[in-house]
Image (cartoon, rainbow, N blue to C red):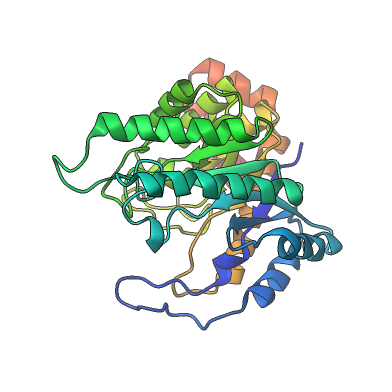
Length: 323
């Protein structure tokens, strides 16, 4: 089994921070970014967002352009992180905002079906709090459950993965950990709501990323993975594999063990460096993690896990890379 990898062309766009305003790298058009991404070898698909993918005919034209290059649209995210949703989406205090959040999701599902996509993700970026006594937690959680249940029931065949993040842009996000996602899945209680695990977010939350992935696989709720790296204190969005190699190897073991066939989306930001070179490196790192598992073999790694002897895995990795 070989993992399916997708990249969103917007990763090549310049990204502003609090000091640069417009970012440090020169601008690039969507069409040019798409062409560069489509040229990457060993890439299976393109990840996109709604509403930037467009509706109806424009979405179909974009899909055809991607298919003509031998690729496909892997997953579709819904934009609930932009300025419009600054006061929340599914948990917003304003009822009209909550209604609009549901309507946007339904439109996105229609577009996904139009272009043959069966997996989507929702990141509730602004649903949370900054201060004590700012929100009614019970009402907020209930609104999220109700809204996501309505969206899930709109098309039971569409797999919808909830992405979690402990903080940023909100200081305390309602959906902060994999446990929060599991609670949400249980309360919404539909067959198609699952988890999107951003490995960078999981690292930032202090999770063992392999454990979070294994728990999702055990429950059969893993819909999508976002790959990025960081130093665990913040969502640095570094090139995959440049910091937490061992953790990624263990994560890949569980994906291979369960023969998971979902989409793996690169999610990293090059504020100052070459963004295209960075995503190419990310693809190569993921393929390298796969090669390690395939070369060593699932059965050998299972034997090490059952043996509960840390030096055996240490020796295995050391000799694999350094002889």
